[in-house]
Length: 101
Length: 287
Image 1 (cartoon, each protein chain N blue to C red):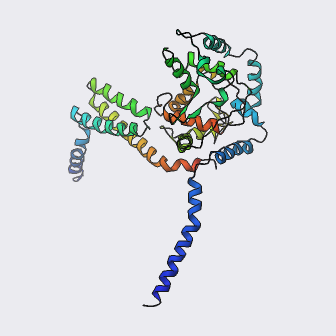
Image 2: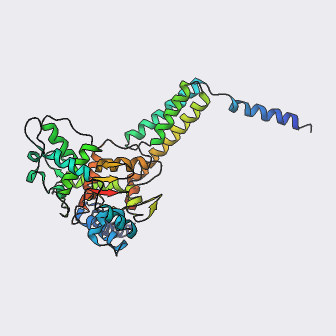
Image 3: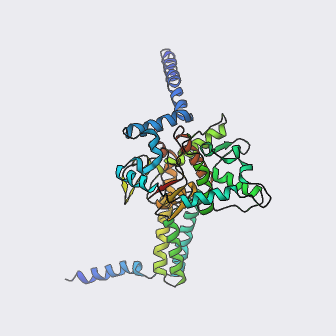
């Protein structure tokens, strides 16, 4: 039992930073990263509709002052955009496996 | 030291022989050969569906399912595209403000020529689709272009397709590296996976024709454009080839390209060429 209190305090301290509410700066950084990835995907002619929707959702949440939601949506948009870039890159050669010969 | 020289020479000549033996294979695999591609494409579907008459592939899902085919044949007595067909005929014969008409822009007055589109324009160095040629005709005569995806464009192409019904698709690929590149680019587009669903055109229309995707039966890729434009119950209206490409992209959660983008023109070229010898059946009707 003696160990449990310090352990609990340590746990609380270690979790505290992740529980902090997102602010505008967090959102702006995440949105900029997502937007850059999204532009790269569009440049490869492989933009996904869900990336565009996630970016729009992030902006809408930020405009309403909900930076937690805005940050989450921006991070999702970045992940989707990166997945579409990966797809476009791998498909440069992978499409041949599907070809009827 | 002496034994090393014959060993080195031996290795070099073995490598040279190996290179000579393998290089023709590599060149052949990368060479664009539309004739071989079309033959392989058609054989794939003929072997996959040995009971479907070859000319029946142009009827899409109806060639895959007997019940649907019967329903469609009954519907063809009062086809849903009839209004568009009548409107298209009237539009086609109505002169522009300058007194000229669509007939002045096309070979044979635009009648019975659908099977030759798209074609490769050697002056422009690009594929020209029927929809594109129609809008260019309008603009050359001082008229505003139509939307590529529905309404007027669908009516006009419906009428032009109707005048070609039964004629065999006859797409030419001139001996021009740019035409071969366009064909190859169209092929690449057709087989490339895109969108969050990670689907290519081939995922549905090569790997799964005849299978259901939700309530719909997927059409085979072979002859899929011969029936264009189509009336789709899902759309509650007519749609062009452009509309078909755009909606296919959206359904895979890919942002569609602009209608008549080079990629769409090229994939239309590829799909039409591999359907050479199959009859035009447009305008069509689909669920």
